Amino acid sequence: MAFKRILNAAQNRSNTLSVLASESPCCGDSFSKVCQYSSAPGNFTSQTVTGFTYKNDKGVNVNKLFPVAVLASNRTLLLSAFSEALLDLGYLSDQDSLTSVSVSGLISALVFEFYSELEIVALLGAITPTITKKCNSFTLCVHTRSGIGSSTLNIISLNSIQTAIIDVVAGTTTNAQIKTSVEAAVTAAGLLSTTVVVTSTGTAGATLHTIAITAPQGTSVYWGTVFLEGVSCAFVWSA
Image (cartoon, rainbow, N blue to C red; front, side, top):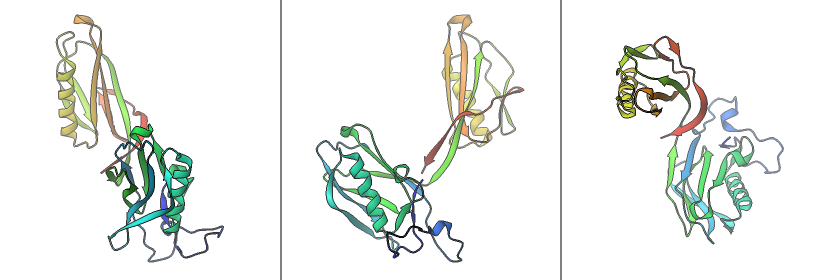
């Protein structure tokens, strides 16, 4: 789901078959890594987009203008303009172009996202929100342990690295204390891109805590001898 360089970018645009450089079996064919280019929310009320700035093979910023300015409120025409402009530059979406470029949010806080081998540097027009480049993609899954009341000798295992977790006293031990303890285990296991959320229900001695660890897919998580399966997996990008 990305715009990728066409192997023979000079071919006739009406050609039925277009071979992408990244899919060519030929030796020496080069291509760039697909990255996500996401704009900060911008107020495009009554504003037009006139094109975009990209970085060419020599690392020089070049402006690519649309044939005519496009109202940001006309999302269908805007997406078509981006797709046509990228095709002019020799880049074709490997799937439906709507999965390779998107426009989302309210017109007062519009966000543009591109997935492309071609580096997108900026939007052109009166509104030029900052664009963030992210080239590392992976999947995160959520591992949950619920119903934790008063308990001692708590051990969490992350990728076979075992760490003792704080003793929990219902109604006394706080979510923040448990979170800090589990985060120490995450650090000890050397896990990256991992977050910990602790919530609770009930009061006093009836308090029950829930720990949710969001970690890269494939992470092995055990609470004592109980395996915590990763669910609600989602594909994400990072810088």
